[in-house]
Image (cartoon, rainbow, N blue to C red; front, side):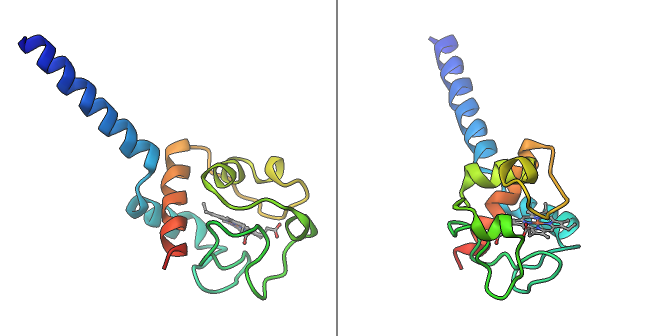
Length: 123
Ligand code: HEC
């Protein structure tokens, strides 16, 4: 009986941990954003790259007043968990002809960054 209980507890713990990782951590995402993205981006101002406020759930290439590459102007990609994960791991493969020369190799870093982009877009 005790063994069954501890197996159940372990299984529940595993599910909770997996869920937490898959969901991403927006606080850690903010730290990553401030160290890796801020050279080119800001939340509310266009810089080398477009402003990110409202980006999650929006069609790519739509930050007001930013001069995008033709590739981003023409694409029909809408930013979601899946498309942002693909973009951050390999922008050129996701939307060929784009002009962001940066990528994020760690899946957990991407998940946290996406969580942060989601958070700043829901305000
Ligand atoms: C070296 C500069 C640079 C860095 C660093 C950089 N980006 Fe970009 N990013 C760009 C440029 C330039 C574009 C516009 C691409 C285009 O028009 O083809 C862009 C576009 C984007 C877009 C699409 C926005 C839209 O409105 O469609 C997202 C999302 C994005 N970047 C996320 C990030 C994140 C997250 C980071 C940090 C991990 C990051 N970028 C780091 C330069 C950069």
